[in-house]
Every structure is written in structure tokens, then in C-alpha cells.
Image (cartoon, rainbow, N blue to C red; front, side):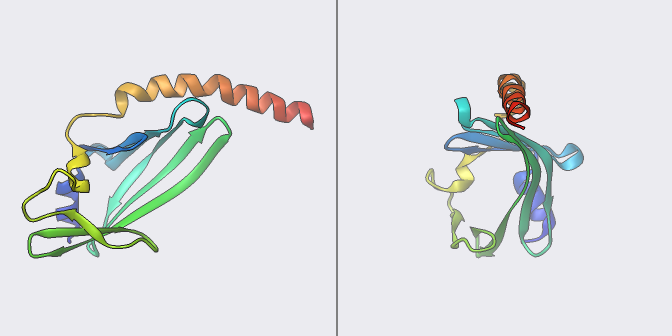
Length: 143
């Protein structure tokens, strides 16, 4: 798939995950996400990119109660007829992302126009900040 095709597929969409969501904003190619809950909650901000080799990547700083970590996650896409296949790089398996006649079980059906990230992002950030301060204080006390 071309970068233009991928851009049109993902721009201004939220990708629903089992335990969170990622948002690909067209403006500035901004990527934001949240995942998990409670002590396992995390949030991310960064960018999303597409390339003419069919690759979509998310490069972001993930924040959790244990600190901040950079992460890059990429997916390759291929089209055969009107069916889109996807695999997580570097070693995922190919699967049908979108059937020619979209099916409800397609991963594609988890891409929605509704912003599923921004409304929860500030809440998650504010919940994690006290946990991070406590973690930082514990680390300093142990030194």
C-alpha cells in the first residue's frame, strides 16, 4: 500500500485496543494513546508515520508509574485485490486486516472516527503523576 492510502486509512482515527486506544491525528501527525488501568496504566504522546512500502509506525514516549520509555511500533500492510493484510513488525504473522467486504471481526472495524483518547488522557496523566512522584521519592530514599 502507498503512504497516501495508509494516511487515508488511519488519519483522524482512534484504534480501539482491548485495554486502551491510540489516536492518529492528521494535524502534525500526532499520536496519543492510553493503555491499562490502575497501577498498570500508561499514556503516550508522539508521532505516526507512513511509508510507500506499506509501513505504519507509532513512535512515542510511554509514561507509566515506573517512568518514561521510548517505543516504536510498526505494522506492514499489503493489498491483494480488495483485501488488506497486516502484520506487526518485525516478526508478526500476516492476517486479514480488512476483508474486501468488511467483517465485524476485522481489525479494521476497531478504527473509528470518534476520539477515544483525548477525553481520558488528562485523567490518566493526573492519576499517574502522584504515583510517579511517589516512585521517584522512593528511589531517592533508597540511594
